[in-house]
Length: 404
Image 1 (cartoon, one colour):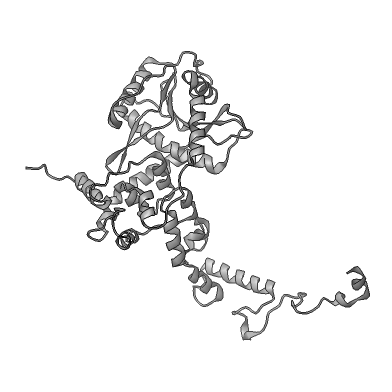
Image 2 (tube, rainbow, N blue to C red; image 1 turned 90 degrees about the vertical axis):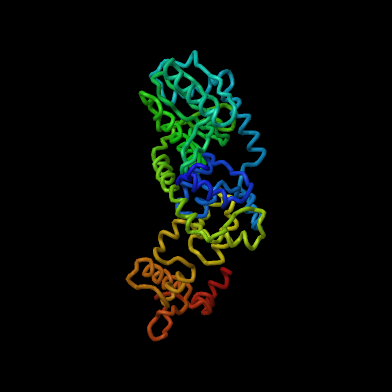
């Protein structure tokens, strides 16, 4: 007899049905987990990522192909810079780690770089765990080049591969992120640094899970080492980035991923996201899961163009940005906002409605127009303001004519 189906097995079977028959699951990586944590309210992305759906293929099948992704030029440049940083046994990388994170420790003159190759992601994760244990026992500096870490996501392991992990002489572990964007005068683009910090926070969580299986538990540092090109050269420089905030957000979102079961149970029977389905059926399946679109999705999700088109068609204010959505409170559509501004709808005691009506009155006064809320239908003008069609009193003077 087949073994009884457990709760976790039933969920994996349900997610396989959503993905489609004979469709391999797309493994979650740190970039996808970081993007999911940046938009925790999007149930559509949560279920698609949880089921391992290839969102790029899905977007193409829906007629909204994605431009999301790294260019080939940036990919080659990033690989070349990473090879430069890790040359000579990672001497430059370890020097930067010692300088930025652990200046009181002994210099990394004789660092160890263990071999981490193995068969399959499970084998590489086991080999990485063994190398981490050996590094802690041996002491000194150790550089793990492209280790494999496992992170539990919704009851199943996600295998993640950071650029590097440094083991300090005191036994502490540090995640290293190597990026090809420049660091000018000691600072880099805040948006790119934020994205790198969110991605590194995922690695920190996975490293903490590996540390928790060891006794005594080694400390995992919450400061990651961000390595970038210095100014416009190919020389590496680095900065210590605190990722405690990003780590907390990511951990909270991963805890919410256990509700994937609830999202899946709420879907209609027979729902499937296979790109091989007819376009109308596939569109209905995608639209059956609510999405929370924001302009930031354009740089983080393959379905962003499809969701933006639907968001604009529905007049959702989220298409204008999360900050605008937060300011408008209970007004969720552009029509609701315009009606509240014209005084046709909305609670006058609502601060958002009051602010919109005041803004509409100021706009009408600035344009010299009658506002719908003006009592008695009288035209309201700001004192001292001329009507647009009336000439200025000085326009007819001889002095003005000579000036012209």
